[in-house]
Image (cartoon, rainbow, N blue to C red; front, side, top):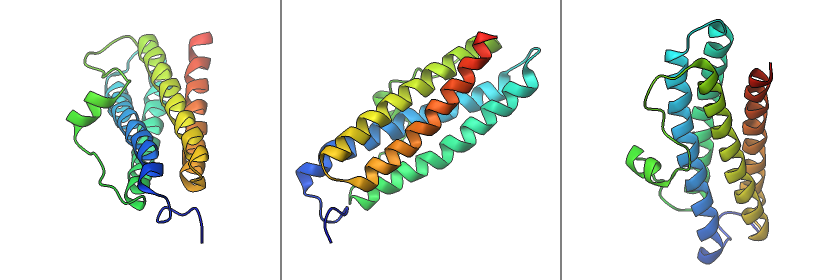
Length: 157
């Protein structure tokens, strides 16, 4: 069988593993951000935003596991400390309570960032002939783009 995780050469895996770790860090920080927003949102849109932020962090938690398990399938250990995630991520950590509108805008930006990270990973996986990572990255990118669209819709009203 060709083009399985086991068959990929070390140099072919390097950029893929790097992309998976980037996606894992971005997703992990966004997970905590959406949970922080879920806990602290208030105002007229409380109900819908409280539910949406919960949907996001529950999805992202499962997504983290898929990304981490792909790293393991490729034969590498998974970075898992918050310190390593915060050093690597391009997502700004949520550290204070902000308005509901600012939460939505901040979360939208995070979702767009993760989708871009995953698109880049999908391209790298395709280049290295790793269709399983490519498929995972595309599927996850679609989820993040959908969340970005839903959040953007809240801002356009």
